[in-house]
Length: 324
Image (cartoon, rainbow, N blue to C red; front, side, top):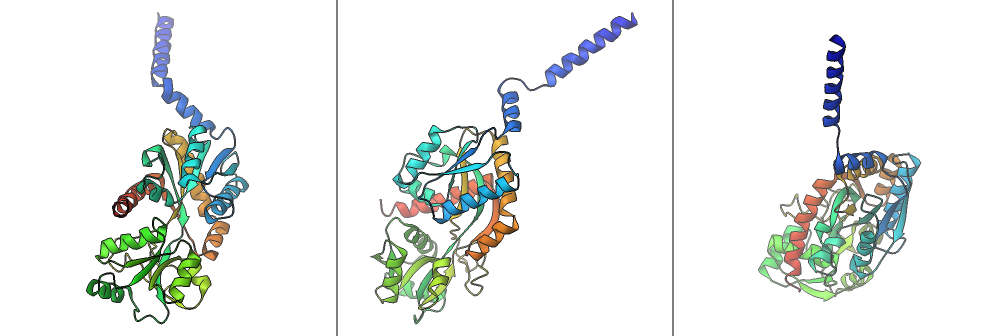
């Protein structure tokens, strides 16, 4: 009788164990996440080799491999053109299990705001931001305006009274327009499709205002005066230049190094990628590279990054509505 009772107890315990085990897709998904990555991870960069986005992707990928943060390497693949559509289409043709991801920045949001490609935020799952670089709004060194508030006060009294050098639909156009919408002023545009064009126009007296990457401004060295920095915090290399946020304007443009996966990528896999990226961006070698190149090293988790991107997209869509 005691032997029968023991058999019944054993059968009951086995049944409880079976009921507790994950079954179906959930069990398969967890097993896959534990095995991730099973092969090299393809990182698609929507630009030609050599630019900031490409360089950062390669540096972080190399750090992840050298430190063993993932057990497979990251292989960077460049797919420029089509306002990012070529890269997105390549991602769509790849694996949806985390082995094919993208490294982009907020130029993606401009493409979405202007409806330049057949993709939107719903196509992606955000892995996170690994730092970024922000621009400055500048005037000539001999300008009468020493602060952003001085310049804005002038523009409110003299609508379109100053000339801004921009390329329509570019980052300088959108960032300047977001500030104008927030602060309630309006400038007059002169076309400048490159940093060299903007610099020539401002230094030559044919434009009053222009946007430059902080690194471009510092490299120029003379002839320009920065009134505002669009990062979240002041840049150590420009300690006297205030941010738009601290001046009371809810505008920032970090143009972050944004890591994205297909929307169907399992959450566990995204978490594994995020953990590796977070460790890499905190590595002293990466931190030193960022600071030496006027970039800010930080980690923003996937959900927080996506919420930030959604907010930025809404602001960009408001600007796009004025030019579409």
